[in-house]
Length: 214
Ligand code: GAR
Image (cartoon, rainbow, N blue to C red; front, side, top):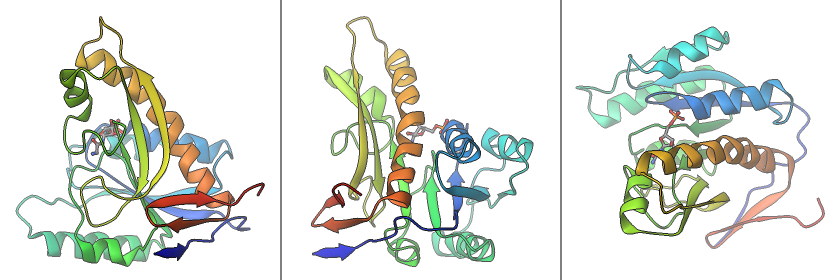
């Protein structure tokens, strides 16, 4: 399958909606890269499915519209309908998942075809799902890292845009490894969004391919 994903060199800044569930450090890394002009995008809305998520407060401090749309007790379809309505109202072009701890349904993914990005704290396809850093540490891998990928209907399974590698040290704990991976996440996420917004690209099979010399 060849999906043409030409988007590059656009004149206006892309409008990005961020979905998160917790701390929000990847959201902050994206927001700062946009503010510095390194990524031609503007975060126009932050949504958390958990009202207590610290990421919401961080967005408000930056003056970025931030709302809680609680998922608890709601059927997935109904919750995602509320998310979609908010994202459409904000005229979002791209959705960035930044520690959003819920699987998206195929119909949500289809609403933003190849326009949803996720960051995962492991070198996919190894260690998908929850607690990826701990999974990798317990397995005994010598390198791990992070992956930014386009979201498809699977779990952490979409085409890969950027990966960054982190060496595992003998004296690492799952926590020290996670901290070094997080530093790389904060580089990888803006890097991936910048690439997708500034370079012509397409999807060949599972591969995200950027035009040479562009
Ligand atoms: C990050 O490590 C991110 O990669 C991970 O959650 C953390 C969120 O931190 N996401 C996943 O595990 C998704 N499968 P943050 O709220 O500080 O950005």
